[in-house]
Length: 114
Image 1 (tube, rainbow, N blue to C red):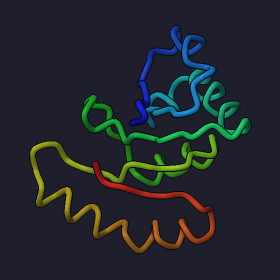
Image 2 (image 1 turned 90 degrees about the vertical axis):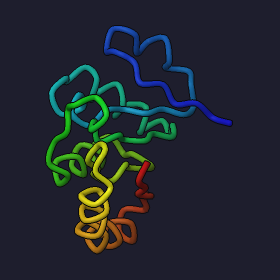
Image 3 (image 1 turned 90 degrees about the horizontal axis):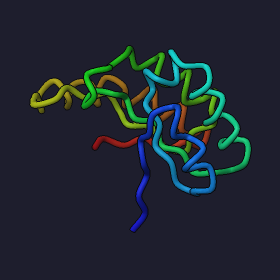
Image 4 (image 1 turned 120 degrees about the vertical axis):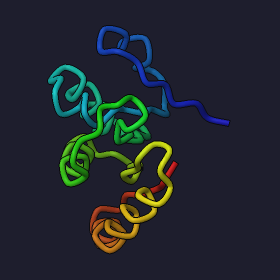
């Protein structure tokens, strides 16, 4: 089993040696130090999952999630979701399905719903 930690910016040095990471898209967008840390890890070939931030109450437009994920060279991206609303989550996944499938073919990234 692999564990990917989500840590505050000040604790990033504690996880630099880990090979498996999870980053929050809204924080990647708003925090330059956080973004550049994960960009470096992406350049080093570390496995990075970008979470959309819905569970933390920090959702952002999914096209912006894709941009920050591409910038840091993420390996996986969590599709948009709405907490406690499976119908809206399903509709969002369907809405983005075609777009992310095209991106997967070009970019080589995996997308998933959690």
